Image 1: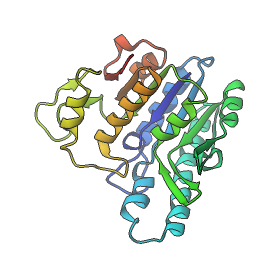
Image 2: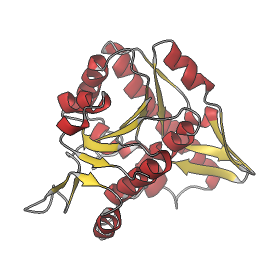
Image 3: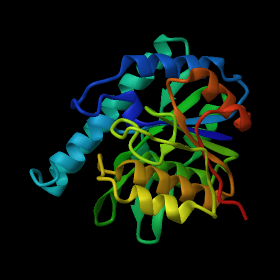
Image 4: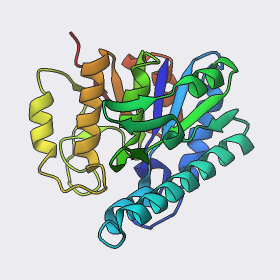
Length: 259
């Protein structure tokens, strides 16, 4: 079972609210068409310039109820655009509404994973997404990684792959610094050092920017004892290799916090 995240920085133009990157959508569709149909896969899309515009920029403008409604409306909008595009491009995909299968109760989150399982059994790619979900006290903002973590407790993973707009995790911001170096592997020997270095960067979205992504990858790998690959979604050939377990041939960052 592979969990594939198409990140918001990859799918959307994060500097422009509510804007899609159609080159990214085309690459994602190609990846999914070329991955073997029999490979069990859960796809999740990030929020990008859709969700983060609402959750971060409008948090102080709306009350909890109005923010919840706008958060859900916006995240579903992006998810529908992504799924509709994939279907038009020949990918058998279907949307699974996150807030309909995950809710927060007194003892933690309640997860109904059966719609995801039934979709996979029928050869259809289920597509979940980060969303604001109902809880006993109001709502909770769940990132796509958090959704994956909750689902993976019931549908055990063999691998996580995060598609980004850059080739992996660098020693400095590759869009700004002159000599960025790709960190090819993060494990127990350097995880703390990498996080400390990334923590100095300012967060660029509501889920903590690259530092938040790396922290989530480390937590997922440590929790489920499987690799997490962070790589460019524009490199379709390498993405297909990663999804089929050929990690040694992939340009990116492999996070593995083993036993």
